[in-house]
Length: 201
Image (cartoon, rainbow, N blue to C red; front, side, top):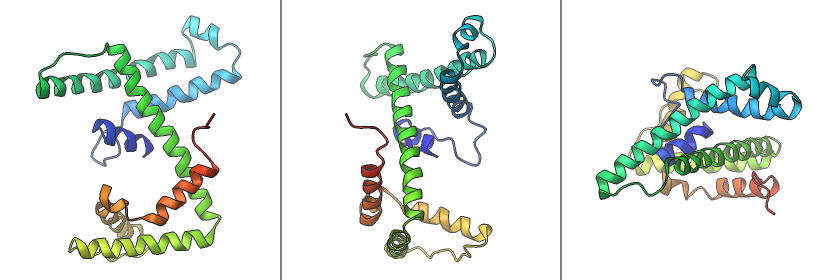
């Protein structure tokens, strides 16, 4: 979900749609992260990299998939620029690949960390959870009324009826309407203050 939050917003590419096939980029990205992290506990990783065996061989395959994805994003953006402004490339592909990956890494992991801490903080503070629930419930009702939409009836214990309501709620969210969720903003801001995703120096 956090990978989609940055890829969809920044590059217009989604991975979570039910009709989409398995996303090889997302899987390769996760695998590459795990393999690189495991290097900290594997003193032989440099030898394995040199011999291209074990996890290091898999890492090479993952990097190829990641490169294919980032270069495809670059090609698409270049085509859009040429079409819109009929201008040539302004940066080398290697630099652009690094820019694309930096956006993905920065958006994915920081979002995941912040959402994890926010969920933990909400679950351990019942008063905050109650206020947040009331704000979201009021928002849903007001937004549905504003858009002249009837809310889907649901039972929170029954996923078959609850999931369409969640989907409908997501449809009521947009950039402008999110700006009215002041308490949600405060919860996320306080979470970032207590548990910053990126340490400030």
